[in-house]
Length: 234
Length: 261
Image (cartoon, rainbow over all chains, first blue to last red):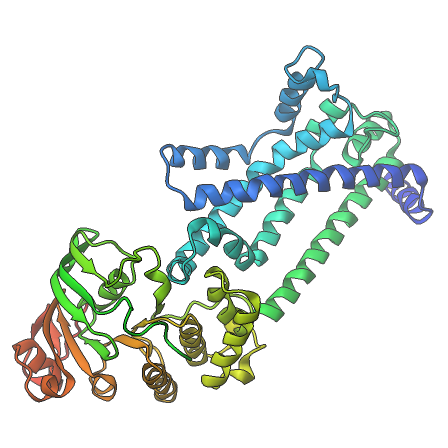
């Protein structure tokens, strides 16, 4: 317990003194996870809309598949991306392994199913509520997608949160494809893992506290945004 | 507000032998009727008679299983663009009243300047100016329905379908909606309205189509319908008798029966 207290004090010290090593790691974590979430939104929202609004053979299977992929184990994603981008792999020519780009791709694979599956559900429900009215205006299903996304913006914020939470917290995938290289691919989760095994508990715990605070800050921000939207748009 | 192109319009609509089944139940059974231009047609009947399905069919939200809908004019694609519909429960978008009214025009690719002019015009004509910047979802249900009607009217439809627009409104809000409907009708839009409210039908109808059990039992000018209903079902309905399983029950208000689809 004594040790825990000491470590915690040291951790706060690191944060308060704005340790540059810590700052670097936090910044890379944010950059990688935010990029993954933005890319996942760009791909996942249209995919969710497609699954929600269009009837095609195999749609049911596709929906079950996407839903199941929400539970992908990060290490498995890491392994697959590793195999793809390793020197002898099909995408090896890009030389992306052990780079932040590979980490973004791995996290994208983790977040995309979450965004697609949850937005599919929201958009389908919204279409049930608005469909007749929008068709009456003359909207095609395609034209309705931006309208529905905007109408569902409040619940879609929660979807974004779920995706970001998944990305920022996972360690398995970024560890495998990033390699936890100091000053280059080290992010909070991989650093915590390393420092713990080295026995440098203050740094590990400091990073843990930062991770929690970050999560809290992002959630608070989005909750405020949500409240503002509700107040303005009813 | 004007309605587009009297004379070369899409009306009259003739419906010829149309049947629709939903979930294995025949909701419209061999309907033939005409919706003439310029009149207020009230589709009257109890719950589950098929009134909503008729409007959805006319508005193109639902295809007929058999039979034909015959609009005038050659422009099949643009027909929906010359109609508008107001639903029983208003569907407000999560944005201001003004943005709600503008949205339908946006979907129909009305240029920004004209859009703004038309929204202003409708807000003024419907007396909704004070609500313009309010979030539509925060309005009372009666106010929302007025916005929904204004939003439909902004599209300058030749024909406006209203599906029981006052079914969940109090008398004051009902009155406001009826005033709007009168305004729109006088401005030249053909109005087709469904209701189960006999008094409302008397107030609004030029023509009555009486629906019962998925069939159009009577089509007549309002006065002659109310004075001399021909079918026993219509006579019972006007007399205030309730319906049991689609059949009229005599005994008036003592008969505690509820008609459900």
